[in-house]
Image (cartoon, rainbow, N blue to C red; front, side, top):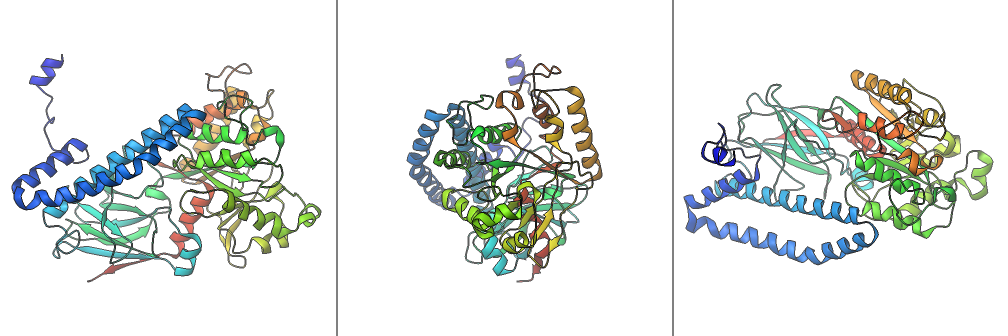
Length: 506
């Protein structure tokens, strides 16, 4: 069969497809051969710089891999896989950029003057300095015609190098990535970019006859609906084993919140975890948190849940509102690095859902989003929470659409699989997706045993399996849904409500 395939390949086998790496480098090779003497020097310079950077980083990569291997071989394999994928993607981008450069597309920027269509995307400087807004926001552009070689480039400033945005298709799975997706039926380009070194982004469209900015997409990549997940109480109780040595996601001796991060990562769902920074004295807890951040997989967002979890005014007054709320924020920033999308704490999750005027005042202008809580289902909680002008944040809101805890804790042991429970949660989720809403989900990891809540076996009512894991399997890996942590959701929302997009005529 292999010989038959070799000598009689299927139709289309040799049709160029620039989404495939082989064709990218074949195109670069052909482009160089067109004028070898003048072009090979440019390629050598670019590739030498790329290889030198890879070699320079290699020692740190190997050191980190060995450290991870000693604690968690699975994490080490995952880290190396991600590292290799990033290098491969970077090599492909270099190939694309070299082809464009060698063919004269960068004589005056990525495109010639005849083809050039530039736009400026800007946000107020004070807000950008405070929050960074690195999470990519999607801008929809109308293109009457989208040629096969259409490209979009971006840069932070006129002095910065143009970077070619990776093209994605509906067949790709991605969230929170800078990229462009062309919809040739709707004649749209969905350009997703985040802010970087400046409060302005420059975009340039190449090889397209005309472009017009349309609108900021409601959801990232113009997805149909959104799913945002959170966990409360990392560090509140010693019974959740904060900082315990890692023994596996379903091992009851592991830190329950580190296990929750692993469970969510299994389904490629990022999770916001509310941290109590001073409830227990466990320095190793910060180490476990940092381990998960250092994977660089953008799998979780640290959020404030106060220092000691006060649930009423009397408890708040013991240490003071500022110590509880802002002190917890400062603890997170002091102990943790590599927080996704910038070194910021976007979210404050209210302990027990308690709120009063002092909570609102203390949190004012200190967070992007204040998430509430109650014990109940909140079926109307499926939209963006409005901006609180008086206090300078989104909220207080974002109540759980359906109470996961109420469902899981009705069983013994808590979280054990029951088909009716999974059907109930799946039906509620499907309803929100069909309406194009936001499904707010959360649970308290400290209320369950890892061996039950993270049981990956097929479900048998009351005997084995986990309702959570079966439900997340239903929720996850849908290409038309946006999976986003709480704070990243509202970073996106803030930019969408305040950004300015202008076409540039220069």
